[in-house]
Image (cartoon, rainbow, N blue to C red; front, side, top):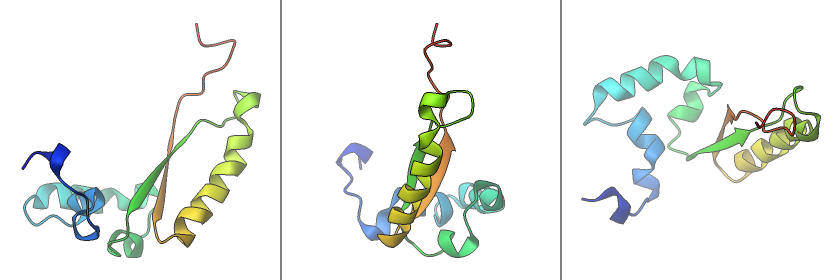
Length: 100
């Protein structure tokens, strides 16, 4: 089946393909081996809840994006309250002085 036509249902979340896929045990093992480096607990991984990515551009390098550091904490709380598992990852900040 074409993945573009594949409807994502709670029992077929992409995160389940990463962390609980009997058809690809190597991928599952790799993701489970690295979960501690990802800031996600084993309970979160095995809960079958959707993992929601948050792209984070806040840093000390770009004062205009500094507020994102606090904002992402609130977003993570909202994702957890809605039943998801937040997964934060960095994005290189674009700043007026360094975008060239």
